[in-house]
Amino acid sequence: MKNIWGKWNSDKNTDDVALSNALGISLGNKAIYTRALIHRSINDKIAENNERLEYLGDAIFGSVVADYLFKHYPFKDEGFLTEMRSKMVNRNQMNEIAIKMGLNHLTQFNKSDHHLRRSQIFGNTLEAVIGAVYLDKGYNATQKWIIKKIITPFLFVDELENSEYNQKNKLLGWAAKNNKQVAFQILNEEFHGGRRQFSMSVTIDDVEMGKGLGFSKKEASEAAAIMAIENLNI
Image (cartoon, rainbow, N blue to C red; front, top):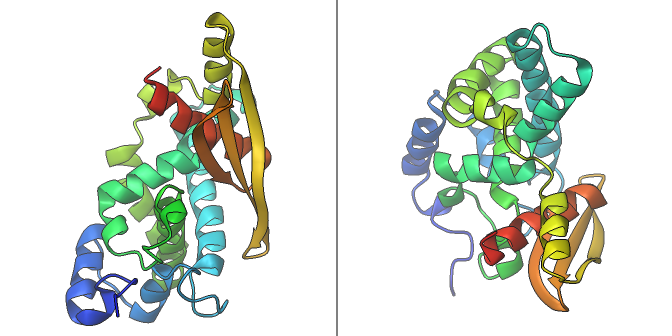
């Protein structure tokens, strides 16, 4: 029978070392980190998959980013700080960071589900890992780790400050200039860890060009727009 979970269970010690190296920390409570890498597609028991840790890690990461921006930009107003935080915690961004950290090779999920491969599953795993680090190390150590291992090497605030965040508006603007018809459609809506998750698609002249997942319609449509922009090479 094909192993849909990857190689995690084949050599536990080797994978502990791989995760420790990817995160740049020693693993204290290894069971928490193991759970952080388990997606509900292979274990739907609340106490045994990473959804609760994902919820916790999302909150911790948002708190650390807010504090970081508040101190990094002492003279910027609330609107600017809110927009910058949105850029930094963007799920597509988190997914890219997780892949660069190598979490895509350690996450346990149903690899036969091609929809999952195109979702932000690895970004969700990163949030779960942040939750695990918090439970294992405490807030202060987690804050320092996030700044050192996530914000500093991957989130270049000066570049993000000048980046165009709303990719949906960018796509709509391109369509208007090129006389193209754009339509966003909700494909699915379900609950994950007590939160409603939306799946949306975007079509250009009735041809599907992107799909996205998010915990709000706005987030899902933004993710779909990002994929469409990549496929269209805009």
